[in-house]
Image 1: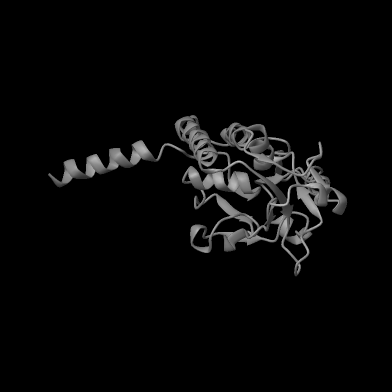
Image 2 (image 1 turned 90 degrees about the vertical axis):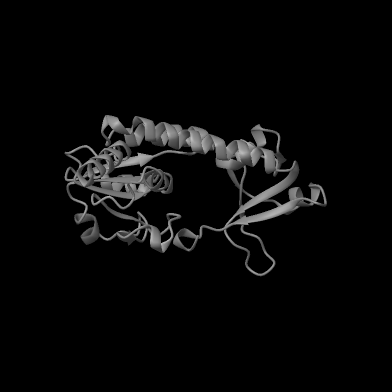
Length: 232
């Protein structure tokens, strides 16, 4: 009986633990929040090969045991040398690309999510990550995309139609941040689904104008988006 029980537990574990990095992948670092979230959803965030993430990634203290680095452009040359032989996922950055592209000792993978909807981001991330994972991860990757889709659909049901302006950053006293987010990410997606009307501009991000703000409906909701990182 103990042998049969052990065998069943082993087979159960094997059935669940199908998602794995390819054998030649030795070190993985993620400075892209979308990739870090995907690794978490796939059960790979605390894999022995995942050695570091960004302090700006939305991962709580108890969810990751590895090192947290202070963002891409703030990395020192000595720290970057630690990445030799590894793969670094990072959000679109001209500065970081200039640093990493000439380095043959590591592989930098730039993650471009600008102008994509949440579901498009999850599909893109799943495709990118699949390049470093074994084929057994296909089901988990599909589940990750479907979960994003389900969360988006749930949000559409909960979200009332309203006029709202999303500011990037935190208020300083009564003054909102200078930059507003419009045609990008979840804001663009909410506009496409006719859930919100917002600051009138064809741009993704723009410095707001007092004149235009005064012309908007009196009950316009103002939301400041602050990157809380590991503090969630």
